[in-house]
Image 1: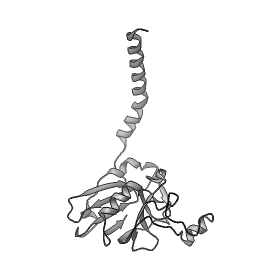
Image 2: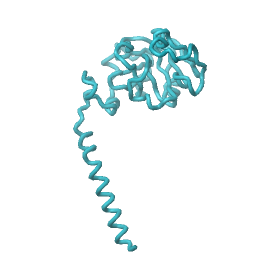
Image 3: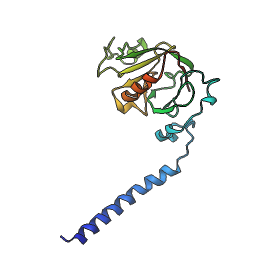
Image 4: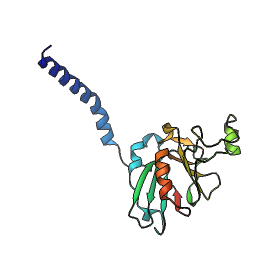
Length: 195
């Protein structure tokens, strides 16, 4: 084979690939960044990377602050002085009935959390165990931040397919490496809002 044939094949392959990808690029450019739409079919996971302003949600930034946006499936973190802002993709509650919104705070932190499903969880799924020790099968992942609302947490997950989806029984889930990072940044007493 000559090098000219290889070049033609490479060129034809590249053109075919770019032609097939073009409609996706055009569709992605046409998406609006409005993540607050009530139509779940119009929401896009990529919209979760829209930044937020703490001033729109809290009276003061006098301590570490977390905003969990269930609509865009993102968690926003601000340091006490506002110099550090971070954005994390999350999993969110499966249904509106399981979603709690409002102001709360971090009341406890735990590395290698154990899990005790609530009675409602076990009623929905009778195959759930009564208790699960820490480990790779535990749905709370490697770290957990407990909120002042009973049975509501911000925690990790070993099942990375859940991130970006409605998949929890009320909690906010992060990739294990991201909850470990957040865990080190967030003290007990951090203010939290779920919207």
